[in-house]
Structures are given as C-alpha cells and as structure tokens.
Image 1: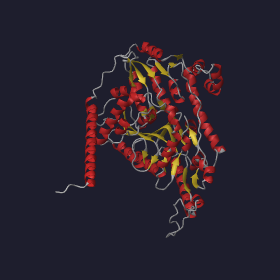
Image 2: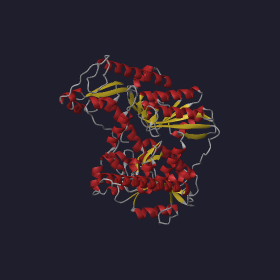
Image 3: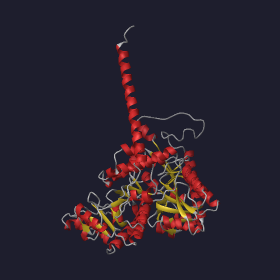
Image 4: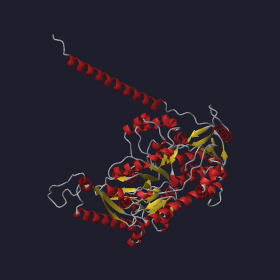
Length: 616
C-alpha cells in the first residue's frame, strides 16, 4: 500500500487540528452554559436583608422607562460601561416607596457618580417619591466626588449633600446645538431634496441652511428657557437659595473659581450648592453614624436599590385578578413591524395594546409615551390600536415622559386624557420627507448615468439621477396630505377646530406648560397621576396597576434571567469604568446612526422631532 503524499498528509493533519479545536470550543461553551445554569438556579437563594440599613440609590447608566433587551453573552463578555447600561425608572420609584414603609430602612443615600442621564422629567417623578420618603421622617443624604448637571439636580433634593474636597459641581445650563450642512452639501455637489409640512419643522434646516433660522431660534430659546427655570427653581427651593443664585453661579463661574484660587469644591460650598466637603472615609463615617450600622468592610450598612426592589416587589406567578389599570410603555423611535423593548414597533406595540385591553379585569389603559416620533405608517398602526381599545369602552390615558413629540404626539392625540410632566417636550406636529441625489458629485468624477425605463417614474428613486419632477410633485402631495390628516386627527382627539390646531402646529415644539395652555395637553402630572385618572374614568375606587410587557417564550425567559444574573455579577465592575461624560464624545455619532437606522417607513414619510433632544 502506497504512502499518502506530503500535501495530502498536511491537509489531513490540518483538518484533524481544526476538528479538535472545534470540538474543544463546543465543549467549553457547553461547560460555560452549565456553569451559568448552575448559578442561575442554585445561587438565587438571596441573603437576608440587614435588620438596619440605608437604601442605596446608586443608578449606573441611563434612567429609562423601558429597558432594551440585553444579550447575556454580551453582558458576560463585554467590558462593563455605565454609558451602555440602563436603569428602569419604575425600579427606582418602587424601591423608594417600599423603603418608606420598611422599618429596617432608616435612611436613603444617593450615590450618583455613575449616573449618565436622567433628565428633568424623570427627576421630577423621582423627587416626588423622595418627598414621600422624607415625610416618614427618614433622612436623605447625597454623597459624591463630582456632580454633573444631571446628577446634581437629583442630589440637590437630599437633606444633606456631601462632596469630596477635590470635587466640583459642573453646571452649565441647557443648550440645543446641531450641525448644518448646506455649504458642505454644495461643496460635495450633493442635492438634498426636502419636502415638509409645517413652517417650523426644523428637521429640514440642517440641509437647507448653515445656521439656525430666527424663527427656530426663538422657539427653541423659549422652551429651553422654561426647562432651565424649572431646573434652577427646583435647586433653589430645596437648597434654600435666593432666586437667581444658580444662574449667577454659572454665569460668574470663572470669577468665582479665581476668587477661590481654583478650588472648585470650595466655590460650590460657598455658593450653598453643597453642605459639607469630606473625603471618602469621613463621609462614610458620617453616613454610618446616621444609619447606625456598618458592614464587615466597615462601610455604612446599605442595600442597593436594584437588589432591594427585586426582594420587595411581589411576584405574580399567575395572571393578576380583580379590577386593574394596565400600563403599556412606548419608548424609542417609531418604526414599522416588530421591535424589541426600547424601540417602538408599529405591529408589536399595537398587538401589546390589544392584548392588554383583552385581559380579563383590565378596565382602563395608560400609554406611557417617551418618543420623538418616526414612521408615519407605524404611528398610524398604533393609533388605530388605541381607537380600537376605546371602541370597546375602555378609557385610554396617555402619560408623556421626557419627550412625546411629532409621531410621539400622533399616537397620543386620540387618548381620552393626556398627562405630561412639567418638563415634557411635545408638539412638533409636522411631516417631512427627504433624500439626497449625487448626480453632480458623480459628474465631477466623470461618472454619468443613462438608460431607459418603461414609464415616466421608472428609475426615479435612484440617487445617481436628478430628481424626477413627477416624483417631486407626488412627494409634495403626500406630505401635505399626511399633514392635513395629522391636523384632523388632533382636532378630533382634542375637540378643537382644525384651524386652531394648524395655528399651534406647523412643526412647532412646545413645553408642557405651553402645550397645556394651547390645549394639546390636559394636565401636568406624573405616571402615577395618569394611572389615578384612568381609574377614575373607569369608575374604579380600588384597583391594581399592571405593567404590561411582551410575553416571553421559555427561551427568552431563560436568556432574560441569565442577563439579569450577569448584570448582578458585573455590576460592581461598572463602577470605576469610563466617566459618564466620556460618552458625550460619541453621542452625535450614535444619534446619527440611530436616526439613519430608523428611517424605514414604506412611504418614506416621517414625523420626527430632532430638535427635541436638548442637553437636559
């Protein structure tokens, strides 16, 4: 028998090596899964809560109404980073309320160093819960090294605010800046074709101008100014500062810092923004004396809020019985089809609304909206689902979060009542369509496009050809039709003449207070207020609240548990990673990518409020 050739022996050996590596990797992954399952089902026996402790409110990441799904493998292998972590607002509120009634919890401590974003709207709801906690006589202490503007607004609601002697309070005010591309598009020989309905639909301005128009500047300055006034009033009232003290601190910051020889912590202390300057050990001892208990590491005894709420929140292993109000969350960009939590899918949200209304015992529905809009088609699918619920005799109340504008207002307009937080941004009733053509760019490179089509519109959507006049006329008609339809449904939902709606529409952005004055919003209040109003509309005196989520398959339930367990394992590692402010460097790129990925309307028509994303 002849001996195999050298090449054959080489490739045979190589294949054996590849096979063994593949088998080894498969075995390793299998063992990792067994280990994960072991920890999931055997390490779940919780340690008893301390007999005496503080509730530690230490959110790491962004506070959201609805968490986005997390891949457990990514949670295990990716580098922990607060910028990519999400915290559910409901977990914070429930933890505070449970702690208020818990005799074992005798204080609340705010540690916000890893809080990336929360905003005024959600902070106002957290503040209300903190007031309920404070009413029990239990103290609230905030301690931190360095406070960003978002962190400080929440920290300022504490009874005592402690900062490190080398820390600072970084206040700058609110702003709304964006890039403008008119000159760049001209230099690149790109024709941007924009079709819009609404005089103030500012999404078109970056493509048509090199600066903000005077009208848009006036509108934006108004609602930004109203939000800033809310910010400073909350801080000044809680800190017992003179009116105007916060703005004066910001405007004179350079001079204040110079007068304290660059000592930012001392400048904040002298301005009354903080109560004490203490290094870590001293502030720990201060809190430990208030709590009256220490752990084995000599730190003040505390229970992190996410662990606490998971222990205190009742488990509903079977469907809830009795009368109740169902709460459905609509958070994110509105896009057609099926979407996971954290985005609004027209089909998936419409189905969830219908399922919530069909459940036995549900007497009213609250739709929590936190969205700047998106697809016209998907928004209409959701609105029709709301109308179907109302046709069954169930009242629908909308609770607006930080933003409920453009498409976000579209899906809210037909509700029986609309609640907005005092810091909600809404309105932006307008429609647009936009796309570029690059025939001039290609022409400069010597590239030309030519051919034939069977109709006058064939090939008219190619970006390498000039805009077809018929297509231009058709898009104009579609945008105008959709805008008129938008006005009509708002008029019907708000019981207003179409002309009155048109006068306050035109793509204009409104603050919550102005929106209420103009009739776009019924009341200013929290999600809790909206739930109470829904119960009253349904004639209920005693009812439960059900937070409706998409039903999960057994596989999805397993992955969800793995993700949560991974988050608990990696939670401590999140602390000490990139500072929250570092994420701001990538924010414009991330937002642009999210915007492009969300442009999936089948008719290429959108209701978006890009201006509604201020640095607040």
